[in-house]
Length: 280
Image 1 (cartoon, rainbow, N blue to C red):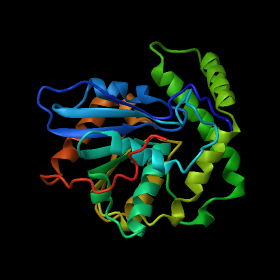
Image 2: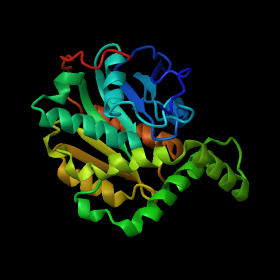
Image 3: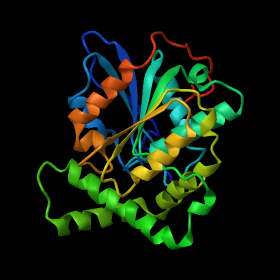
Image 4: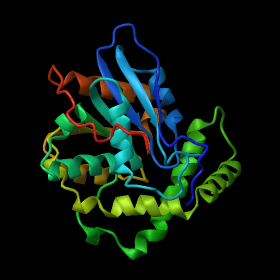
């Protein structure tokens, strides 16, 4: 098994305690990324927002190359570990696939995700989605793999304190992809290819989608397609922005979160399920 047993699969952190917490959010990072992708947004967080981040098994330096169980369960476990109910779960990129899978499968099983997990709403950042399996073709596979590499390069650029030489940045991205290995590409493709079969129309939760207008990794058209399948949904496009709005335009992204939270009705639905409470 491709596993580093010295690394915890799930690390949950509270990112500062506001003087008067009005809402609570859980932030989920994408494939090969880390909790640090949220740092620019956290520095510009909306007033009174209690923020939690989850370091997940698919993070850079994480414990698993090959998943030991369905990865949606790690999302459920992260939600269960946050004390109290959650106003909004915010997922980026690959994590949007897993969060959608968790919510859709729960709803398809006859359970209300709101009651099962004690969450009030979902915010999806740069989601991947296709309506039909026919929309995936063999010819686009090389481009999909290249998009994963470009995602790594974009993340390196965003996380660097100063501008990097393009050749240096490209070399670092190649090294990052080499370290992640083909297993990471397979887990992404597996989750992505399943999106046409998800019962997302049954997810009766407020959903807000934020997408960068210049995102070439998860094109805005996919966000629009997903919105067409959801019931209670709004879409916000941030121009002059790529795949990571929370890092590229943190103040604008913070405003989007704040405005979305303001639309939610008062009150909480207490979580019913303890299925995801165990850590092993």
